[in-house]
Length: 337
Image 1 (cartoon, helix red, strand yellow):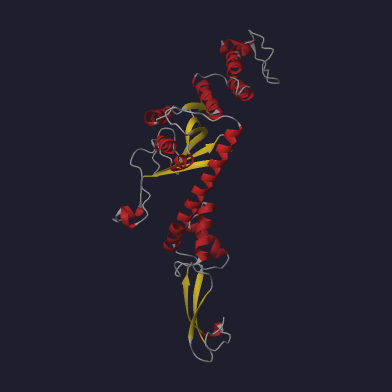
Image 2 (cartoon, one colour):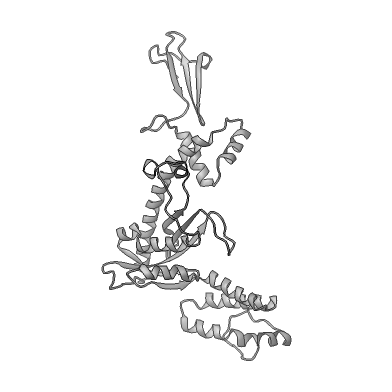
């Protein structure tokens, strides 16, 4: 710290004022020789706005990345004898950092989509559709989640998110969010005077279908790279695929996800009150058959049809899954029949 006029070192002993700005400080220090007061910043500031400090932006980015908030951050700071930050300051920096994170996420999705196109072309698995000439059809997995967990009967989350994952790259190629609430709008602000993220008015359960429609039929990244979603890998949610096929210009082939298929199959067995041992056997063999014969629909169909005869010991399945044979008592066989 040097005085601009005298070119001598400044001393903190001559501090006139200290102004705290979150995790940064501005010291007003008087020169011992010329008595000129100079402001000393403890951290770098942004070039476009010198009232914003980089250390506070890093703290806001860290809370977003770690999934914590003001309370957890201040608990960590106070344990290290560092002065806490206010919720208003942290939220202000989160809004600024959030735009940068969103921009970086979109760029990352664009790169992942380019990689997915390349891998699909190498696998010779591009789908063409006359309804969308000049565009390449790809395969994506889709799933959605909510910030507040649903119980199966009640979905009342105020926000949700959905992602598309490339079939070959296994990377996120696009994403969408839905929000039913905006704090500033509730306080009476107009949507034009802030970055309002409220974009949904329906039920929380309908967010998944709405995001799927947006990602598959109104996706700016798809238009940029001249692709469309020809196949969709997801759970057995009939409302989502029905909404997609209703508005889509091209055909969409639905592929059932293995994990959700096994889960649905297991739930059906529990509903008919089969013994636990039988249910565990069928779930194990059902998932094993799908894993072993994926990509071969004829063999998969034959093996699935042989599950019950094999379990009841009425038909000998010589080519059934190795090391998965299970012996049942006669009582269990009667229950299976």
